[in-house]
Amino acid sequence: MKISLIIPCYNEEESLHPLYEELKNVTGSMPNYDFEMIFVNDGSKDKTLSILKEFAEIDERVTYISFSRNFGKEAAMYAGFCNVSGDFAAVMDADMQHPPSLIPEMVKILETGEYDSVAARRTTRTGESKIRSFFSRTFYKIMGKISDANMMQGATDFRLMRREMVDAIVAMSESSRFSKGIFGWVGFKTYWLPYENVERVAGTTKWSFWKLFKYSTDGIMSFSTTPLKIATWLGILFVLGALGFIGYAAVCAIMYEYFSFIGLHFTIGLILLLSGVQLLCLGIVGEYISKMYKEVKNRPHYIVAQTNKKDIVRR
Image 1 (cartoon, rainbow, N blue to C red):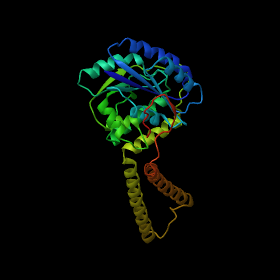
Image 2 (image 1 turned 90 degrees about the horizontal axis):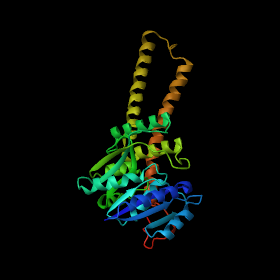
Image 3 (image 1 turned 45 degrees about the horizontal axis):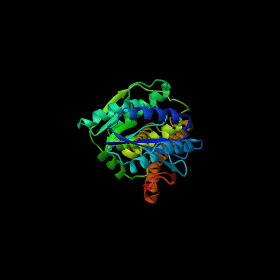
Image 4 (image 1 turned 135 degrees about the vertical axis):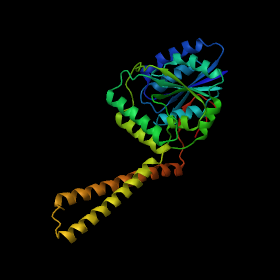
């Protein structure tokens, strides 16, 4: 039985040595399994690549795939999925917030044959700001209601999957990727493994609030057309409101012969409100069109600059 470990890396020079030592300890405790470690360097600007080359020289199980620039974590995970050779494949972060110590337990659960995937789910958010935690919980609630992707509260990208599930994920070759949604959309039976949040072993997070917000909106639009429906219903609502206002104004003109209730400030506010709704709806439509534009161009998900793997899959 061979297990592939996919580890996206972006400016993780401080985390790689502790991670590698922990991975050696975990894999060493599982002598009945073969392992491969696929490190994907996502255009790092520090010494990440040179450290990965050092690992590859001393450990034949290590494969590094280095991008020509930063393509994003989704592209890095996809590159890993495209190049696994194991019966099982796990994806995990390089900062050790996804504890390697959970891998043996994940393997035991998957080997029972009852599940196709074991996914880690955070039960606490120690070290995370309250505002970020609030928006994260809100996002999962929204996704659960408006999309057909099964997403558990606190779900992470850290999971171990059978090869069949990995192949299904690779077959979804869309450009605008949102793996948490893809994992749920492809189906397969998943066991949710709870664990307490672990802080980074070194360095700082690369995910700013704005990046997380953009990532969440990409996820919503990748797996739901609800925003388009909201735009439609807003249009209907304001049309009905406008008709009602016109009718009310006509009655006042006929019965009372005055329009003094329609002040200048009210008129300006109404115009601004309607204009804002129109722009919002156009923006929503534009976001979906931009995603269609990216898909039509059909550019590769990533470009490999360096690797020690002979038969690399480039998509």
